[in-house]
Length: 28
Image 1 (tube, rainbow, N blue to C red):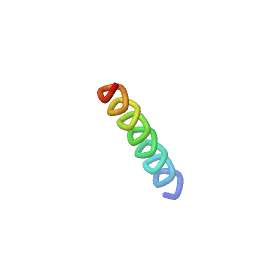
Image 2: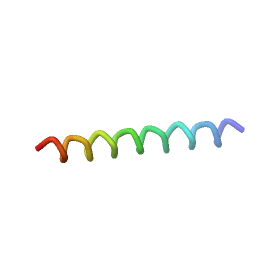
Image 3: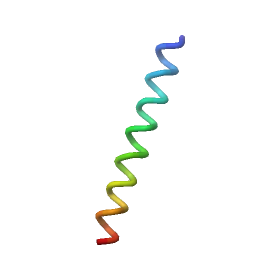
Image 4: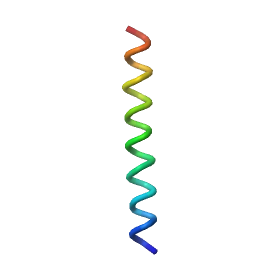
């Protein structure tokens, strides 16, 4: 289903953003 695909992409983007923030915090 398209909705499942959108949910997967959104979740992946959220995880990517969270990981980026986490990595930035570690670098400080």
